[in-house]
Image (cartoon, rainbow, N blue to C red; front, side, top):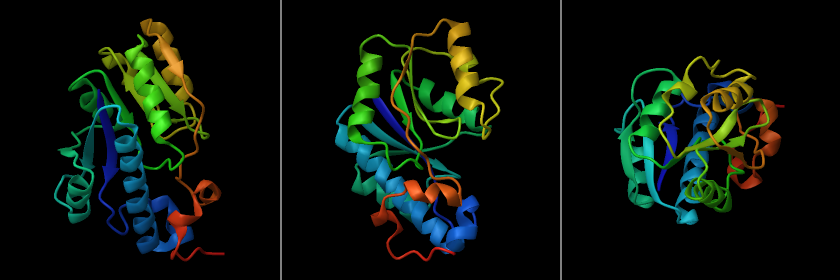
Length: 203
């Protein structure tokens, strides 16, 4: 089983930009780095498979290389294309595979293990819904390139569109309990206090 974490380099002004009004460019980037490490910790602690860090825009940033060393995980550069194309290529480069976003601190080792177990038990696709209409984890056991086509990435219909695609493609889908992700200032209420320590929040 492959466990993939998607992450952007924590460059101020380029990472978690929607959190800048609340945290500033430096604070948003620092929180992003902490979230990435949190996701890698969950994947590693699950012991459900080999961990890979899929990096954007490439694998050259010192933080990403440090994560590779600290978590003994392979670094891969995310391919070109929209989010769906990038996830499809990453997942289908070796199935079965579970892909985690790096902005959902509520994803735990047990959730990752449950996703891997669902695929091992014969499910074709496993999802962990987000609270905003998307999802924070997807696992695939079989190739399904059309699953990622025609999705309004970043919108509130991503989860429903993906469910419909699964039904149309005849994929056996399992959904695990939902988990909030941290995208906007109002999402910070779901962020564990230790991840916000030392960061200045705007009133």
